[in-house]
Structure formats: C-alpha cells, structure tokens
Amino acid sequence: MKKKSKIIISLIAVIIIVPVLVIAGFMTYISVTWHGNHEFQEYVYTQGPWGHEGTWASDDGNSYLVCDKESMQNGFVNGYFKVGNTWNKYEVSGMNRMVYLHVVKDGVIIKNTSGYMKFDGTTFTIYKLDKGIFGNDKFHYIITDK
Image 1 (cartoon, rainbow, N blue to C red):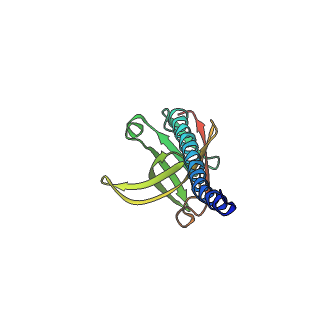
Image 2 (cartoon, one colour):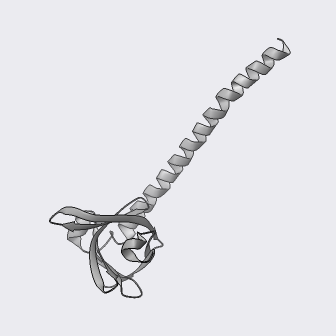
Image 3 (cartoon, rainbow, N blue to C red):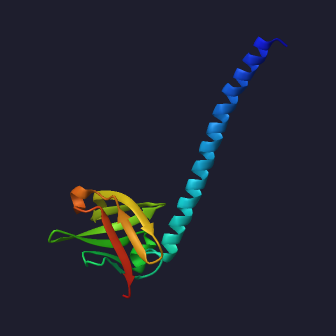
C-alpha cells in the first residue's frame, strides 16, 4: 500500500474514532450524573424534609418547612419564608438536585421559582433562588422536634 493511502485511511479512522469516543464519554458522564442525582433525591426524600413529619427551621427563624403527612403524600412540603415583614407560603417540591417553590391558590400555581438544594443529613440548604423575590440567595433549614 502506498504511503498516501495509509495516511488517508489513518485520517478516516481518526475522523470516525474521535467522535465515537467523545459521544461515549459524554454518555458515560450523563449516566453517572443522573445516577448520582437520583441517589441524592432518594436520600433527601427518605432522610430529609420529605422523609418524615416535622418542622425544619432556619437559624434566624425567618424560614420554615412544615412536613405533614398530607402534603408529603402529594409530593411537597409547606415552606414559609419571611421576606421583609411579610410571610409567604410555598409548596416546596424537589427533583434530583433542583427544588421548586410554588404559590398555589385554589389548586392553581400562580407564582413559582426554583433553585438548587443540598442536604448533609441535618442541614437542608436551598440556594440560587430568585433574589428579586427573596432578597437573599441562601436559606438553611435545621431539623427540630415538632
């Protein structure tokens, strides 16, 4: 085989192999990330606010999650956030590492926002919420007895 033919075959092989490797790497990353997020969601839903009845309160007393059997069966907990001098009630739900806060009136969502959540076994953190609504980007919840 001529040298030119070997170079062309090598280039074609590289053009085929590189995209296949990139796609395989990306799919592996997606799979590992999805699996980790799903495990985290299961952990939060069994050990965190959705896992048992109780009240979670922030250290400053301006934020609460009230976890009762009825709301948990519907996939959310009730969140109360004090913004300025006003208390706002939200239905708080989560999926993977995202948290969703909905204001519901007569069974219809009239306002919502979302952020991210962390949970270390005792502290549930919601962060990167809409600063226009909350004026702050971080809320910590520490479990307390009901």
